[in-house]
Image (cartoon, rainbow, N blue to C red):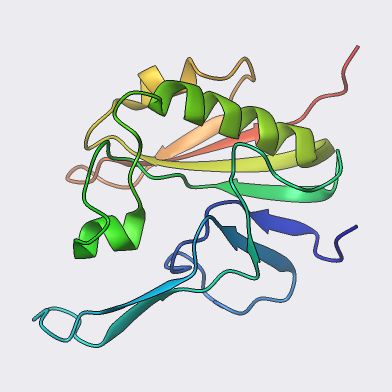
Length: 164
């Protein structure tokens, strides 16, 4: 049993969080790593991925209906090197299994989400269009947001309805 009401299933470096230590959220990812990016001119220093819990978003170790709110922000690009700053920061999808992986991720997020709970899905369609990603779940989105004319980032909200 978990005490937090919110799950970030792929937290990475917690870049979207206003409070990167928000105790209402269980921050989870598949890795714990640090990268020296002192050579980067835009944001030199260190980047880190330091989740509260290590898990695979395709097979999460939580009981059914554990969270009121789930954030699902999986990697958006296929086959990028995890040794690159971009790969380290955002992760990489497998070139061959990405469809199955995202479908399993959606299914797991909805499994651990409480009935009437909300899932927020974040996707950047730099590599794969959002409309193709949304076919990987049978759940119906409520609404969404595109971050701007020059941005390909989308936020999509779902609600878990009672199973009949």
